Amino acid sequence: GENVEQHPSTLSVQEGDSAVIKCTYSDSASNYFPWYKQELGKRPQLIIDIRSNVGEKKDQRIAVTLNKTAKHFSLHITETQPEDSAVYFCAAPSYGGSQGNLIFGKGTKLSVKP
Amino acid sequence: GAGVSQSPSNKVTEKGKDVELRCDPISGHTALYWYRQSLGQGLEFLIYFQGNSAPDKSGLPSDRFSAERTGGSVSTLTIQRTQQEDSAVYLCASSTRQGAGGELFFGEGSRLTVL
Image (cartoon, rainbow over all chains, first blue to last red; front, side):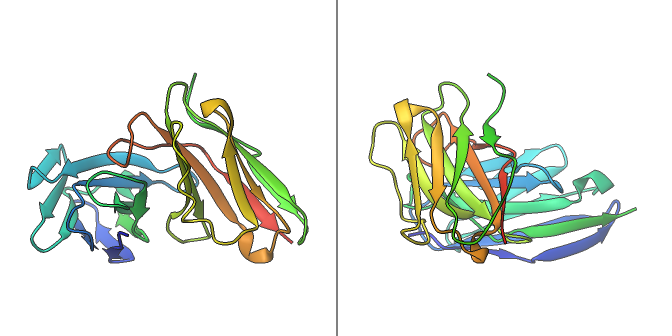
């Protein structure tokens, strides 16, 4: 089965700076990699995902990059704002490809200081 | 309907008692997942239902945990003889897609406290 490692566990940045969160996965057959954001006391919500036929995907201030050879993918947030403060989770399919359930990383608590 | 609905939102119980947690997924979503989130921790997979297929129970931590999904819709997670280490937020999610390739829509969760 899949194993997902996420770093760092906590990240503090100044407003306007960039933030990068990295994840590694173990199953080379995995081909779907989502990122979820969980604000304090709220439910996790999908913010961006990437499939293995592309190396990078952008959506306004957030982007995700994927390196299949190295089996890692990263979340990049530019021009951070206080409302970006939350816990971010990466995930990968449990049985490779896009099958089974999602295995989540342990999360990164991002704090953006005004 | 609206989003994924879970009940109760909060449950306090005594050690050794049984509890049932309910999840009502978004109408038409064939996939349903249960995850557990302990304080300050990540999302721990428990069980996954997909259509009429046999559920994937590989994440259930012990035989005290069980879940069913009736009629392909509502799901109930049952914890028997609760222990203090069972205290956590239990999150349910549903999805339209088979497998792990689609967006998961989470409920607000059921916070379980075992005294």
